[in-house]
Length: 254
Image (cartoon, rainbow, N blue to C red; front, top):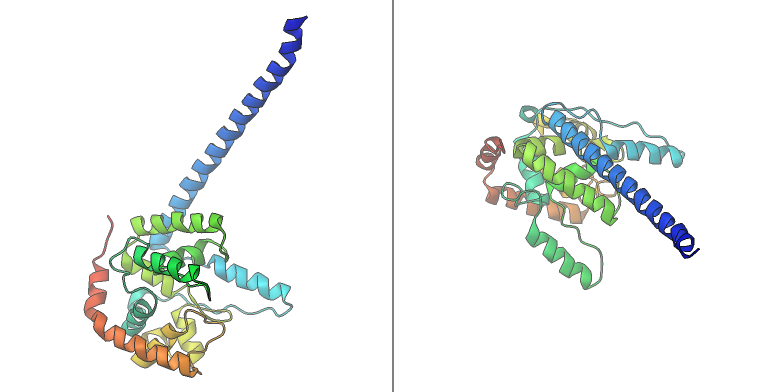
């Protein structure tokens, strides 16, 4: 009689353990499949131009819900067909330690945390590599889950891509106005020239609006954007221009 009283709870406990083990095995299997698929995807995009980005899909869906569908503008341009001035300007304005770090600027992250703890507007510390990961593979937002995925993809592209490839994909993926993606579309939209023809001043204006490209205009800059563009041109000279880019050309992981 006593043995029967204990068998019920013990059996239920054993079943719960079995179900938990099954769940853990399925979760582990799912994570392994995700890891393998993401590695394959990153390897493909090391050589193949991404046909679209997650951010482009997000913008298109947003426009449908807003009742004002937009036509996305984007034309992929290879590294050699993008102005060197734009390459340097973006690095100067967004990530001056781009050539040195492995995807994360620890000093900038710490400075942003201190700033945000003091209140006021939130400050980000995303590197170009992190922005590529977010724009190409993920959705907008600030959740810890999304940031974790961003860190995963950032690590992958830093391992499997050269710095030149990261910057090339960035310049072909970043948004420069509503529905305007990539250097070629931005050059045409704002200045009616090709991406290879951008002047130093035009490049600096495009780089200056990147923190808020849907609110700021490169072709009709506010006084703040003009001031920021002037600062970027100064930083471009300090970085070393074409000599800096030559270092990226030879930056390979394997």
